[in-house]
Amino acid sequence: MDCEQLAPLYEEYALGVLEGEERAEIEAHLARACPNCTPGIEKARWVVAQLARMAPEAQPPQSLKSKILDAVKSSGNVTAFAKAPPKRAAFPVWAWAAAAALAVLTGYSIRQMGNLNTQLADLRRQMKIATLQSKALQDQLEIGRQVTSIMMSPDSMPLKLMPKDKNMPMVHAYLHPHMGVAITAEQMPSMPAARTLQLWSVPKNGKPVSIAIFHPDPQGQIEIVAPVTMPMNEIAALAVTEEPAGGSPQPTTNPAWMAQVN
Image 1 (cartoon, rainbow, N blue to C red):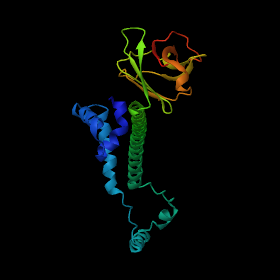
Image 2 (cartoon, rainbow, N blue to C red):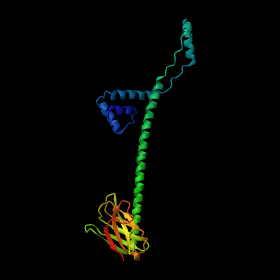
Image 3 (cartoon, helix red, strand yellow):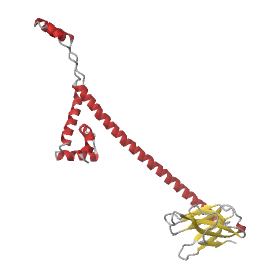
Image 4 (cartoon, rainbow, N blue to C red):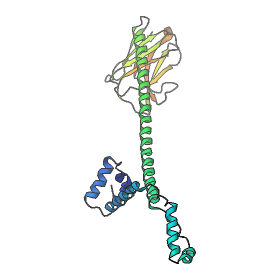
């Protein structure tokens, strides 16, 4: 830090409240007799030293005033004394020191408040991130529970969606008449943000019906549960195609994975 950056911290250093890297920077400047920081710290120490003199000046007793007036009368200079214009009371040193000390303490308080506000903002961001992470984990646990329920149900039909590309992993599906379909896969390749996978139910007669769009997670895993609106006995096959982000009303590519149902 240069001298210009350190100048606002002189009073805090003199008060003994400056800590950490900033204190070390000032002490490093003082150690090499910095021509800017050395007199700046000395001036700040003088201001702090005046804190001990902040008591107001005591008013002289009335008896002392009377004695001074009597002494002036006896010297014959009463007229000159009476005509002398009253001097305006000087602003006492202790008041200047009090104002300077108040300015130092105010600056320090404002700086500390800024640090606290920054820390509070960081804490709020961390709490928000933790809340989102907790919700994502709860959602994932709920999906895992649903997948397990469909997989374990005796009413589910297990299916293997075979890949068109033999280098791709197989996708497993479990079709339930009421709970929908559960899809699982591992070691899936990553996908561009502009593309998505889309699951279709292919009827015996008619056009494919979209069931869900999904992406593999960063570990290449897929675990989803989606409702199926078509009766199982009318489904001829399940298919997965690669589509533009957001999905398509109808498949725009040939199925990359497919399994016959009926």
